[in-house]
Image 1 (cartoon, rainbow, N blue to C red):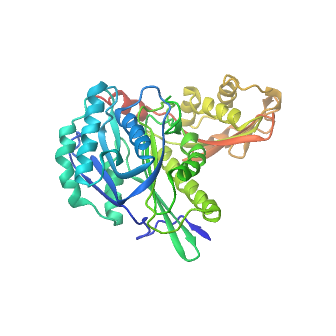
Image 2: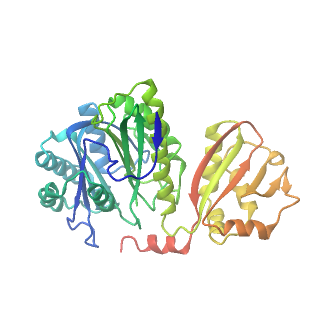
Image 3: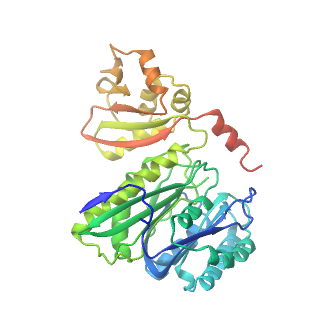
Length: 412
């Protein structure tokens, strides 16, 4: 059994068609309504934002998954309007579009899964989506061009589409995974399962032709999300609309069992990891992608808490933008994270350059060498707390003037 992560023509999962049209929701006039249909239906698992303020499609999407036991036949996504903080009118608009999509794609209303992304607090122009749905029917197809149209339509401040594929070879037969994501700002996902307590947006859709039940998909999705989308941050802002949806059409005829499950789980992690990296790499105004390797923590949770503290520090992020090896900011951010450690046992590296060790500046610290490392588009900062054997990898980025400009003018 083998896994391939190469992007291949014709390697899209069986049992799905994709399409997109212009409905006039985006001010740019670009594609803004995307649809994926599973003509024979698909089993689904989802994870949603922990934000207490959630968009109408998150509320409706949860309801639909609960009502159908995790069955989805159509995915309806609009970009340019988040349909969040729009009250009961927003819920009604979302339901209205789902009902129309059910009629258009010949499935029951609850099997339509909605998503929205865009500006918060603006009423959803449901009438534009309703008018666009008949046009989507003529645009649906199973080719890479159709799938890429879907991936392009869900973009907002993204500068490029984000897709990834993997193929699992099972005794000569194939199980395929195709992942699509959008997100460039308002990115600090904190995702929980659809049935967990409710606590620019990241949207992720994962399509596979594996034969699997909703509960089995949920068990596979959680670990993949935790090490990918729950381990990235662009700006520390958790969106109201964050959604990860995994759909399995069963089109391959290959059933999930213990042997297939291990290989499929690894392939799913590979796809999620690729999409997570693409999101950070395309972050608003990003000049540097920084991998934080936290080691020597007592627990993985402690390691991630330290990573988030550093990743969300404006002082650290602005230092990264100018390639300033100000290691004191790293140590300070770790220190106020709430995780207990002894600074005398901490060691810090920028790339391979030791900058802090055993309570003080590293004896061989070379500021110019560290600066050169930080000029690269991507590099790693490693921090060993000296407390235990747990750790984590967390992907983040710098904070630039371009990010401020984009978000200062977002609603105007």
